[in-house]
Length: 200
Image 1 (cartoon, helix red, strand yellow):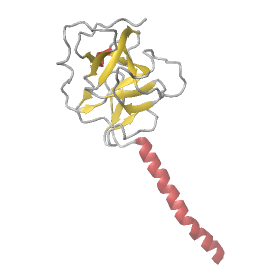
Image 2: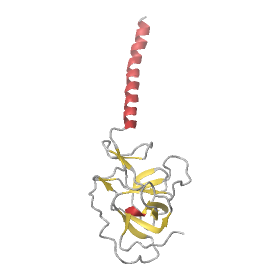
Image 3: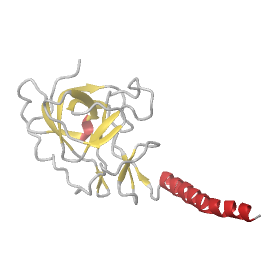
Image 4: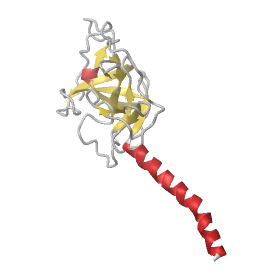
């Protein structure tokens, strides 16, 4: 009987640790806030959990948390009446991605269509850009897909990464090696009027 008592007593700390771990996991999965809808095809933010990015069922990352940006549009003053110059890509700035004082960002996708031909959840997402970030666009396309928003025009942009399901915060440069797509509604021309060529 003393041996049985020792075995039972030795198992109690393990049982307690298992219960605590399971409870913490359930709490982390449920979150402790409400989800805000993002503008256009933007990611959502879990309030109360460090403003972490949540792609719905994917694990969240706090390394790329949206900022508490001002609600003004930093790109409003950069649009001009001039036609784009040169062969492109042409500069645009992300704008109007701030909702209730929080920058939800603009999602960069691998295609401008509902189905991008990949099979894992959120694999069409290649990251996102914050309000005011620079993007370099090669052309524009009305794909007929609105990205869960109100418009169907997209910009084909240069992008530094090509990792499916990425939630990294980035901007683009004219020499980035990869391509992505963003809703044109949330990108305003920087130094030109936005009349770039239609994608072929």
